Image 1 (cartoon, rainbow, N blue to C red):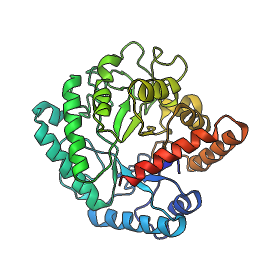
Image 2: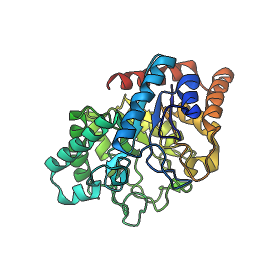
Image 3: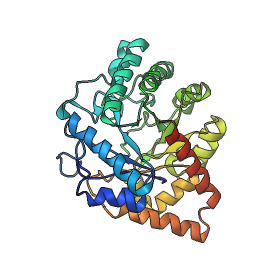
Length: 339
């Protein structure tokens, strides 16, 4: 129930991997992708009709064998990161940079509402967006140069994220601010390796959108970044850091909602920790839901089962407390009830 997991296939019928996730492991959520990173071919989304059938059948299977329906998530920021895209038969959408450059918050809210309606019709109830990273480094490839950020101005980022959240809420779609505490100053990409922002991060600016939107009660979930900042935690990147999550996000910023990790199978985590240790450290740090995309160049289909085993072992040997796990489960369940 503490896992948000990717899978292969465009149909439920005959999909042994999906049945294992939903019926044997009873995962808390699944995440859909349009393309498979390893094969470059189709993965979960081929057409509006097909994805609607997939999500309907997926919910029915989970309800029948697990007694509840999982969260169904996807990254649909708009523009360059849009799983419901033109290749799959969906209309084009505006990205964060385009919306930030026009700087019309009414347009941003309308575009978010339009994207939200697409998600609702597809049977996707959780959009892993908006991006609230401040575009402080023009040489940042993963977010800034790819057009995934609203602005280098924290106030403009906050204003457009607020409008985006309003639009999604109007469409009945859950959201997640990302990537906490900020990935916009980095030169490296955490998909590819370890990322150190100690010398480039400006926490005053980068935390400003979180501070404002959390205080306004706009935020249901926050996604962590795999960025290391020695000034926050001298040992661990944010996803694995109790100082970042418990100290800054929950303590300083007063956030009591759901914390979801970025993909633990990204090299920024996997290369240094391994999936089992990373999962346990993330839960100890205060992450509630662990994302395992199974959509990376080096795919490891045993990762989800190994994570479940590692969590059980950590509970048995005292590295994880039952109270920590129960608190995480409570936040996952409360978040899912808001669908």
